[in-house]
Image (tube, rainbow, N blue to C red):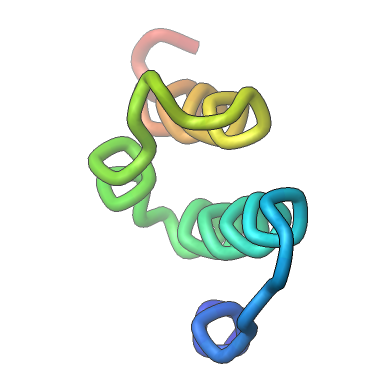
Length: 65
Protein backbone atom coordinates (compact mmCIF):
# COMPACT_ATOMS: atom_id res chain seq x y z
CA UNK A 1 0.00 0.00 0.00
CA UNK A 2 2.68 2.53 0.93
CA UNK A 3 4.55 1.84 -2.31
CA UNK A 4 1.47 2.86 -4.27
CA UNK A 5 1.08 5.99 -2.14
CA UNK A 6 4.70 7.03 -2.67
CA UNK A 7 4.27 6.76 -6.44
CA UNK A 8 1.31 9.16 -6.23
CA UNK A 9 3.26 11.81 -4.31
CA UNK A 10 4.75 14.67 -6.33
CA UNK A 11 7.21 16.36 -3.94
CA UNK A 12 8.44 19.82 -4.79
CA UNK A 13 11.93 19.86 -3.26
CA UNK A 14 14.96 17.59 -3.20
CA UNK A 15 14.50 16.83 0.49
CA UNK A 16 10.86 15.83 -0.05
CA UNK A 17 11.85 13.59 -2.99
CA UNK A 18 14.51 11.92 -0.87
CA UNK A 19 12.01 11.32 1.95
CA UNK A 20 9.53 9.83 -0.53
CA UNK A 21 12.21 7.51 -1.91
CA UNK A 22 13.38 6.45 1.56
CA UNK A 23 9.81 5.52 2.50
CA UNK A 24 9.31 3.63 -0.75
CA UNK A 25 12.53 1.62 -0.42
CA UNK A 26 11.85 0.85 3.24
CA UNK A 27 8.50 -0.55 2.15
CA UNK A 28 10.35 -2.79 -0.32
CA UNK A 29 12.63 -3.91 2.50
CA UNK A 30 9.60 -4.72 4.67
CA UNK A 31 8.39 -6.96 1.84
CA UNK A 32 11.85 -8.60 1.69
CA UNK A 33 12.43 -7.27 -1.84
CA UNK A 34 16.04 -6.47 -1.13
CA UNK A 35 17.11 -6.88 -4.75
CA UNK A 36 14.95 -3.97 -5.86
CA UNK A 37 16.61 -1.69 -3.32
CA UNK A 38 20.11 -2.93 -4.11
CA UNK A 39 19.59 -2.56 -7.86
CA UNK A 40 18.00 0.89 -7.83
CA UNK A 41 20.04 2.81 -5.25
CA UNK A 42 23.37 3.87 -6.73
CA UNK A 43 26.61 4.88 -4.95
CA UNK A 44 26.01 8.44 -6.17
CA UNK A 45 22.63 8.61 -4.37
CA UNK A 46 22.06 10.73 -1.28
CA UNK A 47 23.44 9.63 2.08
CA UNK A 48 19.95 8.76 3.29
CA UNK A 49 19.34 6.43 0.36
CA UNK A 50 22.77 4.83 0.70
CA UNK A 51 21.88 4.07 4.34
CA UNK A 52 18.70 2.33 3.21
CA UNK A 53 20.75 0.38 0.67
CA UNK A 54 23.15 -0.67 3.42
CA UNK A 55 20.21 -1.94 5.49
CA UNK A 56 18.91 -3.93 2.52
CA UNK A 57 22.36 -5.42 1.97
CA UNK A 58 22.66 -6.39 5.64
CA UNK A 59 19.23 -8.01 5.72
CA UNK A 60 19.78 -9.84 2.42
CA UNK A 61 22.85 -11.66 3.72
CA UNK A 62 21.46 -13.84 6.50
CA UNK A 63 24.52 -16.07 6.51
CA UNK A 64 26.80 -13.13 7.38
CA UNK A 65 24.81 -12.12 10.48
